[in-house]
Image (cartoon, rainbow, N blue to C red; front, top):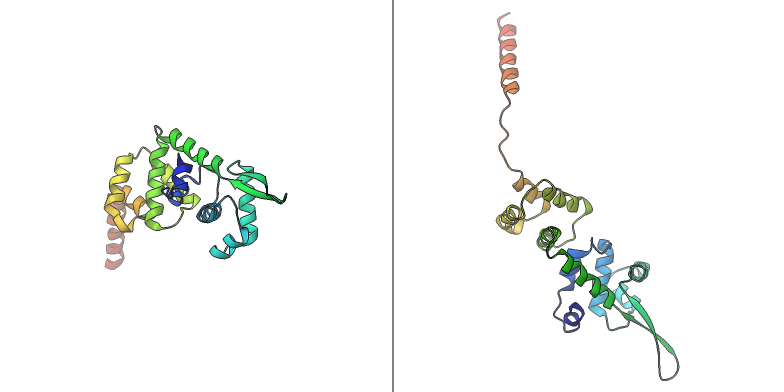
Length: 198
């Protein structure tokens, strides 16, 4: 289904990859290169064209292709041309199948809520979140903060949405002055008065 939508030009694969890249075991750079491949994909991958068009090193494109093959997200076929020459063609069907599997698996799991939070923040900040930021988001759910509360605070933040601002909003509360602080302030006043009167 996803592959069909992609071929029809109806799939927002960049957003989908941003939301799922940690589940796909891909880095931010891999996702950028994979998005570039999907931009130019026609069963043939011109590594030089992708590298030059998006300012990637050719070695980064090669490493990403090797990783996609290693993770079984891509297949290579050898086609025989009419003049008996061989031509490599690529299929990304396994990648789309893996994405479909992840989506169906997450439908009834809390991780789909985490995925939605991640995708919303990444869309607002126009960048991929760092591993530390992903860990912070995960910790909110582990601490029992409800998805509805997180979503409500995200809506309130609007264009200023970021992991840092959202964390501040989720944990905002007035810190009461501790009784010990009151006592130490009172003691300091007494000492000051004693010194002053000497």
